[in-house]
Image (tube, rainbow, N blue to C red; front, side, top):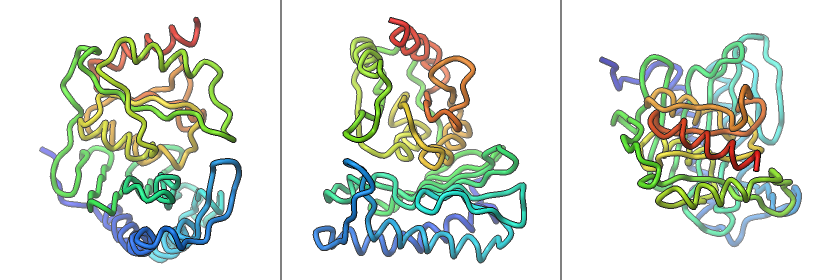
Length: 268
């Protein structure tokens, strides 16, 4: 039986996330006074985002000085250890953060030779630490996570991410949305892919799909869903979500019908 005792790598990620989160929470309390610059239409980078990334890079680098990084703001940073790297999103849900919506997270994953071995998604407002490691299971704080047991799509709550200005959408995204709305109990768009995946792992959502995400948005969430007993795939056949950015996550019972529904919509 898997234990909720955290391993060294999880402890390293948790400590870094909690340290970076302190600054985020402070800035969130003064969100109207934040310095904000535009990265592109409706795609903002804040002073808080940059500060959090600096803290994470420093703390993770101190614990594992040879590891490389893939960072949202700084990009890829080579390490002396060519096999291991951290994949970091310092603030997933930036638009929520800027508008005072308490739904954002820090996402950290440990990747070795292309495989995600461990991940942490920390939601600081409610102090929920979602974490998982290959073969050990998925947890929120000290409670074991399992994906939901719902098997009928018309009883399922499905999450997604809507296209926004400055972000080229999948041309047939709205066809997929229409198809899922017609067959499910409802669709939610909360604005943080890392938390969407964590919520699938926790059984709060039964599934999630989105197009065009970045590796740092989903790396930690992928191991969370898998270790909670869920399934991860690309939306189209034979496509790796980590490299394509198109992802479908769901419990084992609804993954295949949801996959068929989405693929049929894309072909329509």
